Image (cartoon, rainbow, N blue to C red; front, top):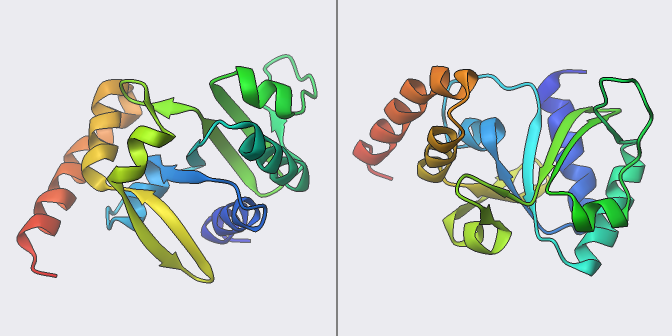
Length: 164
């Protein structure tokens, strides 16, 4: 199966379980028009008891396990979702990073006003706007983020100069 279809299926599972989340990272940049590649889906979730339960159910459906260099099979659950801030997971459909926040501790509540609603296939998704994706990648400062920043900045420049 193509990576894009796998990513879409991950997002479909989260949506089917009514998880409150925002698509961030590379997938958000791609949906915003950036010509880049990514190898995982990154989301910021709303950390509430009810949402943690829905997210745990979605992760069970995806057969999610934590990435573990020691090879242990650690399964995400409600308790871990309530206490750990970064969940770097492998699923049957590909890698999924489930985060409490990005950048300068921007949580779901702080990001929700920086999203754009996208209709992708049969899904309605909250996607982080490109300007905030750029800010988060600048803050992260990783080599892979620095490598994509010129492309993201140019995409934003083109979006701003093109009438709707």
